[in-house]
Every structure is written in structure tokens, then in C-alpha cells.
Image (cartoon, rainbow, N blue to C red):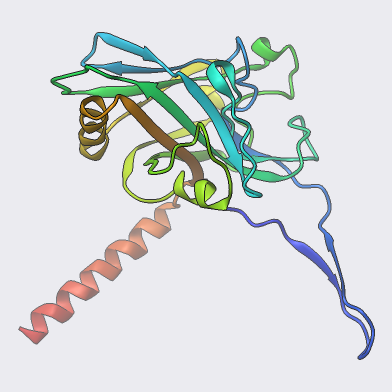
Length: 234
């Protein structure tokens, strides 16, 4: 996550050190302005069965849960105070709850989330995707805690850790469209297990930076070095 910087004032010995929040920051978010009739969150299973989220919302980096309900806002990322989001520079992890009781034979599943546009909000500066980066990575995670009835930092961390269920790249071109994230094998296994044990299926979501090509190159070089070292040892 992006940490909010602090302005620290150095003082002479014996005087109090003062810390204050930094100047207003910009947004780095996706799926903002998804409250009530603007946003939609559905799960398409086996290409034909559609489940609408029974609960959707966010938990911020202070552990507060908006308990969104069926029409809640599910922003992921930072809602800045210096731009159209007009927030408090808090970071958000979002969540979705589905009732899939009785579902059997799961072979595919896609989470479909609407990304609002300026046309939807009636404000050119209020859009679903807004970032200082040209694109962001949005990743789904398993949710071990029930986000519909709890809050706190444990839940905030839970919604962005554990087993990944899939990811997608979002950018300004996704505003005004439905974003589809295909669940991977981990997600399908969890979905089938939820259907067989009460029907409550929870997903967490968080955004992150998209690695630059140079990052991928360094990762490959690192893996190559590890492989070479192992071959020398053998």
C-alpha cells in the first residue's frame, strides 16, 4: 500500500518534535463512485449463472468498514484530497460477498465490476479510475474473515493477502465499462467449497503498481542467477 508521508519538524534537544500530515495528496484508486445505482458487482459462474453481490464495501487503512450492503461503494486504493475524489488520503481494500448455496460443478467464474465514468457521476473529475500512474493492477484475494460483520486492521490486511484469486490491469480506458476478473484455480476451489459449506463466498480486492518492464527483466535475471548457482552446486 502507499503510505501517507509525514512532515517532521526537527527541533533542538529538549524541545518537542512535531509531526503533521503532509500536504493534500492525489488519488490512486479504482472503482470509486460505485455507490447505489452507479456500481454493479456480479459473479458469472459457468458462463450462465449470475449471482449479484449480497454485500459489497470497503475497509480503510484505519480499519473502518463502510458496511456497504447491497448498494455500497467499493472503492479500492487511495481517495485523494487534492483532486476530484475529495477524500482524506485513506487507502481502501474492497470486498464482495455472494450467496452461492447449492452451486455445483464449478468450472469457471468471472467477477464483473462496473467502473463509473464522468457521464455516470455527472462530474468530469469524479471517475472510477483516477491515478498518477497510467495503469494499476487490481488483485482479488481470499477473505478468511467475514467482511460483512467485522472491521479493524486485521480485516483490512486480510482483504489484500493470502491466496490470490486473479488480477487485471485497470486504467482510464476502463471508466464507463464493466471490468471482468477471471477467477483462477484458487478462486474456483474456494467458490466450490463455499457452495458446499453454507454458501457464503467472500473476496477481497486491492490495487498496486504495475511493474515496469525493467522490473520483469531484473526478476528474470535473478531467477537465472539462482538457477546457475544451483547447477554449480550440483
